[in-house]
Amino acid sequence: MDLNSQKTTRKSAIKSMFSGILAAGAGLFGISQAKAANTQNDNSIKTIADKDQQGEVPLFSSVKVHNGLVYVAGKGEHGEGDITVHTNSVLDQIEEALEGAGSSMEKVLKVNVYLHDIRDYDGLNTAYRGRFGDSPPVRTTVSCYGGIPGNSLVEIDCIATL
Image 1 (cartoon, helix red, strand yellow):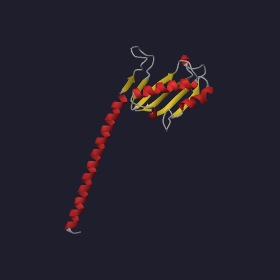
Image 2 (tube, helix red, strand yellow):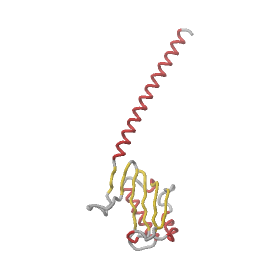
Image 3 (cartoon, helix red, strand yellow):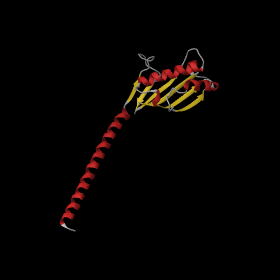
Image 4 (cartoon, one colour):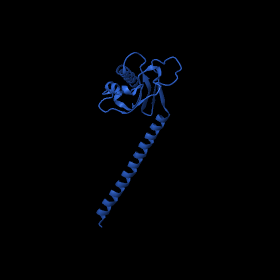
């Protein structure tokens, strides 16, 4: 091997070594930054007061935000009307709670639906369809033996992303 080939090979090896060291350092810095951000989020739980619960010590929280997720407690409608009226009211309440937390209906991942009467399933679906955008969340629907608290025909809770 001539002198020029040896110099070129040595330069390539040195460049490759420094590139590797720089990449490793950048990777470690990025990982440490990500860990710091995750650690901060893990300990941060934000409670968002419900407009009806302000000024009193609530029995439960209406909305919690933790680690980039929004948890909305079950909402019900306690007035007059059929399943369509109740479902629309409950979905409006959920939408308001999500927006108050910085999220939206399109960001909902999981929904639990509790029906007073399973025979209202079709009416529920009529009001529910399209409310969560083009890609609806996963959903569980059950009928509750003994009914829903407050004489609501439906109660819905959900989990969404920020």
